[in-house]
Length: 460
Image 1: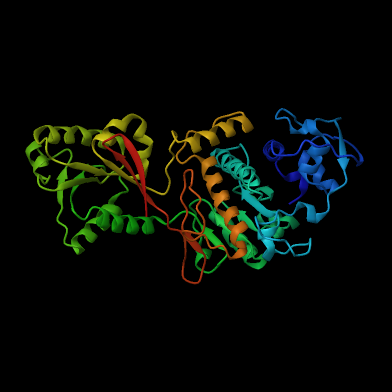
Image 2: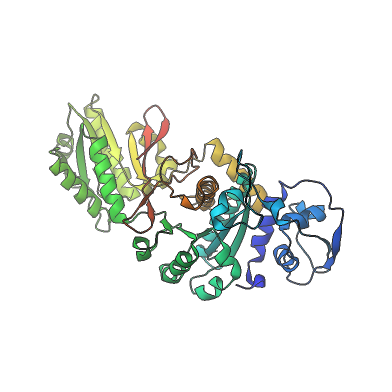
């Protein structure tokens, strides 16, 4: 990819994030002055002169201010580049004995080279979401620098109809240690062959069809398939609620996609000899609805839809059951989309002891989330998109996890559980190898809304 094709705003972001951590000392000597031309960016200037953004900012302290934008006619001092060995970030308490020119096997003792190949534009929702995800990656790199972990980030706007071959022709692509992308399934085959040929780790951050996962050991897929989630969630349900009486509620939603889950769950309950009841939200009488509940055991309610109207109607009927039988114990088992209803259903979630299975949890009240949100506002002068999950937090978690892993374990890092104690802000990661192929994230959790007005995440 040509230098001038890398997004201009991407470079300004890098400047904002890196600038806050630089030393204030002035460079005593410089090669020359550069007069900024139209459409030039700080990144392209650094590339032209073979220097880093940090070196350029140190020579020109005004670049460290958050309001600076390069304009035509500006004059910048161009320093001499530092020697290669000065940019190596050694692992803590580990002496560096290798030569200044490092190989990928030495990633633990050198700058980690990060590639991002996603639609980074503002033309549609995909681009806007991926820009936010990319910003999260940059924020993670900024945080890791405080730990002595240095990164170089290369970003390419790989849009839906973008030319993968053109992106991969950029020499910087083959130098990457890890690449985050792509977003579209049709781009997988070429990118998979590229990372396998160049021994690069490829992190597929979002749900796409990637048959290459089963043959390419360099691939990490974050999202699990729907079938895999259904099977694992059903098994976990049977383990966790083995002493409960399940009550399935048919809500009459002809558009529901939850049939595969409820049928799989019922099959597993039958196999384990666990009795359950089935009732109907709209057709069952009050007496019949109440008889579905066990007065001697705890009850766990499962709807066959994830929609809000049916959930609200169910709360109404459960209230009647609880009024008629004050001693009865009722819990509910929901779906990931219920997290979007929590703002206005929070009291009901607490009251009915709701469990929501999910691959992520965005706790907007946690100190860690609030710190990243504030940092995001400061760096990018806007709030994160009001989505679940928050894409910036997703990018932060993904980058922090993989870059910390590469720094600690080098290219042998496999993303398995327990490799290091990183508490995710939003997205837990726990990878397992798929046969002789790549690795897939198996982390999943129950978000539990407790009657004492607390929320806990139960990982599995």
